[in-house]
Image 1: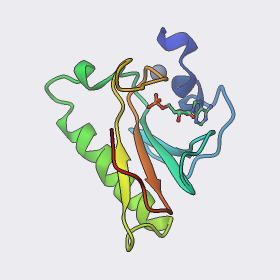
Image 2: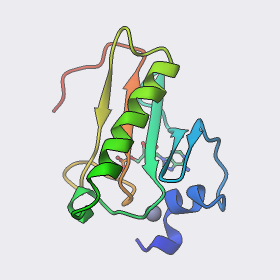
Image 3: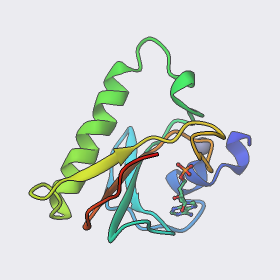
Length: 115
Ligand code: AMP
Ligand code: ZN
């Protein structure tokens, strides 16, 4: 998938519809269109990075920012007390459907064991 037809790039540029729960100069937060939990958010960098393997030296601040924004968004959704799960799927075996790095924030129910 190229950047041109990447759905998350399109949303980030305002070329595809979505509602931003948060947006800054590096990332944005939206609700997952097919939620797997009562609260299911996606924290998405504006830059088209396919997966963690595409991160380079100098991206540490961006990665830290994504996790910081994920924590803040989870707190705003009322998930801080009971907890939640952050997931970053990678590639085919990891179940990654959209080849643009993103952090899932899942909560609002007791999540099952992973695997
Ligand atoms: P992953 O399987 O980790 O690549 O996750 C991709 C997620 O993006 C899936 O949970 C999809 O439901 C979600 N998704 C795909 N298209 C959209 C969209 N237009 N708006 C919101 N979420 C989307
Ligand atoms: Zn993209």
